Length: 352
Ligand code: SF4
Ligand code: ZN
Image (cartoon, rainbow, N blue to C red):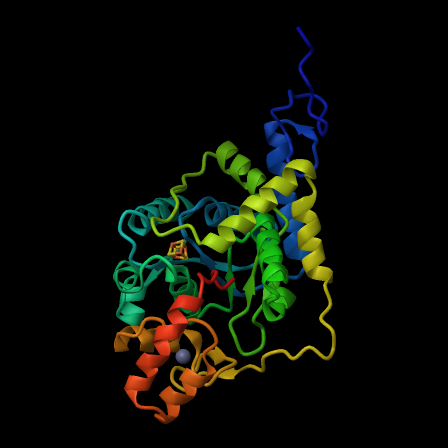
């Protein structure tokens, strides 16, 4: 019988895993310690938080945000970050998915002892995702959901007096988004999607403390720590384009394990040529949210839903926005404009 492999870190305990990120054979205790030390390293090297800040942790009940809440609470105590931590959940109104995952958030809240606040699409927009899907079908549902969630988190965090939002995006999510934005030539998003801290100009800052944590290691950490999370996919998933990008990334990773870290690195290093025009940020004329157009995406999508023209906010919106703001066109021509657009557009991905 071959001798048991010993942990490469402590040299005394039996190795329990081979780290997906480094290939090192580690025991359970040394892996947990290394994972926490790396998140602490990310937090301190990027100066993500200042003492005294209130941080709203976006809590979905899934593995990433469950690990994030657990680790942040632990590091806050261990290293004296001096943060006031809160859990903030968004209820999209998806029966059989979000209600169950919110139950996991509530169970974790008890365990973590952190305050929890839930904002819902129904209360913010007057529409649940279940109802939106009944209107728009399963092609553009993630566009609505992504745009609404982004604003819902911002509004919820502002309501709680938070200084910052922390989200559970991991290295795989970021690599996937870098790849997807690159494939789509979306320079505006490509430029900022690998940033660890975003939205400082006039928007509530958002940070990603798990930016360098591999998805596989997050699952292992959750397992070793006995964390309770919800792992079922959304009933309205998958977003087709993101799904293909994810599959491509997994294939690449199978041949080259450092693909995830390499793509995150590429996203950080990519420079945009000076003559490339970037959208200028202003504020939405209706709700005051940050927007590069007169109406923000959420207001435009909502307007479409309320007018019975759900495709109104899908695709490039400027002509339609002008029509809406200045009533330059009668309603019928807006409807006419909807027709040919419907055939051309494919599904859009979630705003990140
Ligand atoms: Fe929303 Fe789409 Fe995610 Fe479901 S898969 S929660 S509809 S963004
Ligand atoms: Zn708006």
